[in-house]
Every structure is written in structure tokens, then in C-alpha cells.
Length: 406
Image (cartoon, rainbow, N blue to C red; front, side):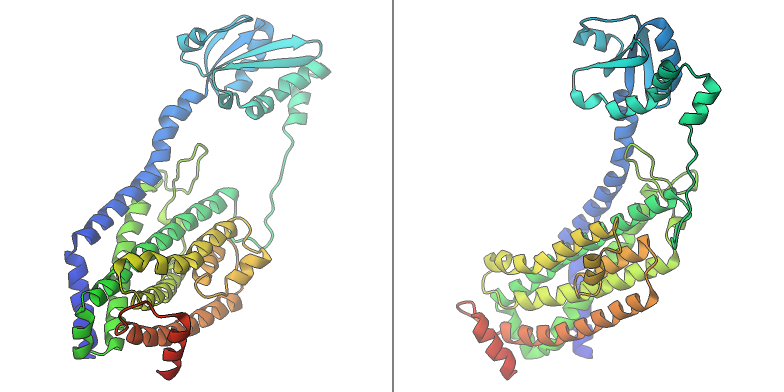
């Protein structure tokens, strides 16, 4: 026990004094803050300008169209029919487009003059101008036309954990941010622990260490120190996330235009506890595998070839979890939520966006705990063998034979 405490405290002290750790912590916090705030800045500048249009056409038509278009666009000018507008005509009014409306019999013909076709937004214009087009085609009074266009749509949830679409969108936003933090921390810390193990082995420090302490205590101290610091990073980054995304109005919202806003009330205590628990499961599984694999490396230049295959399931888990944000009950998503390494990502996502049966959560936890136990035994054996293997990298058959004898 004393060996473990010594290794654990030494590893914590070394990492906390490391400039790389502190710089990574600050850069991560700044990156998260920018990730959340940048869409808001873009929305207030570029997107606001992208909605500026000039309405052209016959006065009798444009007068009826203006109230409809103002729902989605900023009208910066109204003019008569134009034939060949120039870029100067657009710049003169600081507009992104000139929308010309012409009555052709009983229909409305709309032409959009833009410098970039991506600024045309035909679907939005079609939706806004539909009532006017129907009025020209049918000659119905305004009240009857509004009754036809404003068709009531009622939404009744069936076995849903959300009361409205706003809550659902907010939950998906938070799930995405937490998944991103989980993925980022695992990738960063797995690389750090691999580099630490490889550095100790290639410099022959490992030989001195295992002469003083057992390989099991050495591996356990490194992994649990990494877990402790990862939880510290996670706590700081979560605080930055919720401060940057806090909605001043106090309600959850994911407004159109890309800005992210949410409050702490959007996440239940159970979901936060579930995230922390599955975070620990994923972290213990992956860091043990990476540390054991790094013990086989004889040159630090070989770390990339060893870590590459180990990152494949982590990357796959992240992308499956992204799919689970939209279709949490798809068969392959449900199956992935029970597979070790994949499960912590996918099951947590399903817990946030849908009502997962308690037996599925309990089964996933049991499977992952057993997986950690198995990975710890196998990884510990591999770590003890790998630290003393020098020269040419061992072949797979040699590793298996050594594991069978240990």
C-alpha cells in the first residue's frame, strides 16, 4: 500500500508541475469557451447581415409581402421593378440579396438576385410568401386564408422524458458537449500515460523502479493519478462550459443560428452522476490498455503505431454516440451500449436523450466493471512483461506465450 501511495503522490506532483499539463488545461478551457461563444458572435455579425434584403416589384405586391418577409428577413430597402441589378445596387443598401416580386396572373413569381447562391434561401422565401401566393390564386378574404394557412398542429409525447422540443434540443446539446469532453480527456490522458511509460522504459528508469516497487503498484499508481487529474480537468472544463452557455433568461434554449444556451437545470443530478460514473469506466478501461501497450515500445518513435489501433474503438464509440443523439433506440446503438469501451459513450448518450430501462443501465454497468477487472488483469501481466523486454519489438505469438506463463 505504501508503494502505491508513493507512486500515486509522485505522479500527481510531477503532472501538476508540468507546464504541458497546465497549458493544456488552460487551452482546453479557452477552447471550450470559444466553441460555445463563437456561434453567438457569428450570429450577431455575419448572420444578421445575411438576412438583409431589398424588396423590388410593383408597389401593390410588395406592400402585401413586406409584413410576411419581416418575420425572417431585415428589409433594408424597397424599390420598383429592376432589370439588371449590379453589385453596386446590393452594396448601396448593404444587402445580401434583392428579392423581386412580380404578379403573373394568379401566381406570384419571385426572383432573387445575389452574388452568392448560398444567400438565396429559397425555402424560407417560399414559406414566407405562401400566404400571398394563395391569396392571389384564390381571392379569399384574409381571415379565411389565415385559417387555412395557420393549420393547428398539436404535439403529444409518447413515453418521452421531455415536455417540449426546446427541452429535447437542449438535452442533445448538453449530451454532445459532455461527450466531447469525455473524448478529449481520454485522448489527451491516454497519450500522456503512454509517453510516461515509454519514457521510463527507454531511459531504463523502469528497471530501477520495479527493483524498488512492484509493477502492479507502479501501474495502479500511474492510472489512478491520471484519473484524479482527469477529474480535476473535467470539473474545471464543466464549470467553463456551463458559465459560457448559461442562458441569462434562466430557461433552456438552443436558438436558431447556432448559438448554444443552457442552464444547470437542463441536466438532472442522475444524468450528471451517470456521466461521471461512465466517464470513470471509460477512462479506466482505455488508460489501462494504453499503459500496457506502451510497455512494449522500445523507442518513443513507435508510440504512434502502437496507439493507432487502440484509438479505433474510442473514435468509433464517439461516432456511434453521435448517432445515438438522434436515434437512441436503433438496434446497433442499443447493442453498442453493452460493449466495453463503446458502452460508456453510448449508454450515457441514450440516458440523456431517451428513457432507458433500468435493467439495461444495470447490465451495462456490470459488463463494464467486469471488463475493467479483465483488462486490469491482462494489462497488468502485459505491463510486467513489457517493462523488461528490450531489443526488437516482441511478436504477438511471443506476447501470448509470455502471458500464458505468467
